[in-house]
Amino acid sequence: MRFDSLTFYEGDILWNGINNDPRVAEPLGGYFTTLTVEAHTPSGWVPADNVILSEPLDPYAYYQIIDLDFDSIWGDGIRIRGSAGGTQEFTSIVELVVHGAMIAADFDGDNDVDPDDFNRFQSCATGPCLGPPSTGCYDADFDGDNDVDQSDFGMFQLCYSGPNIPLDPDCANYN
Image (cartoon, rainbow, N blue to C red; front, side):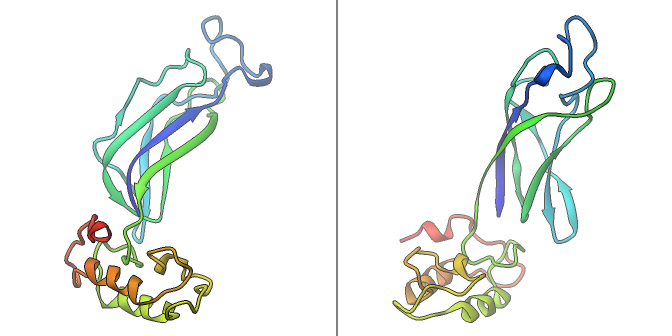
């Protein structure tokens, strides 16, 4: 999966009276003082580059909604990390919305479409109208018609780049 940005919805630091108004007394926690984005890759968690926040982190703002934009990063998961504020150092997250794209045919997430990906695609093939795909093969049904057939193989061919040759992220959008 390619990740491009995310939206962080901060919780209420006054939830259930756990903190006083932070303008009056230092809160116990519920907010970040620093924030980074990391993607999970085969080599572990990797930080995203050039993270830009739509607004600064503010312990006095309740329910902040912050968009984080960053250079595209590939992985199978994403998280935010940072330093927690307050005397007991905890954070409050209501929701995290991730924006990105699954690149059709790059099943192993190595940013190319090569024979390894073809082997996975081939193991998922059902033929026309012979679906649904087996468990773990739904991502090979590129056209969403409940089978893995020649139409899906056509999309696979459009995305094929070869070993260690970066794929075109828009390859599945060509008609």
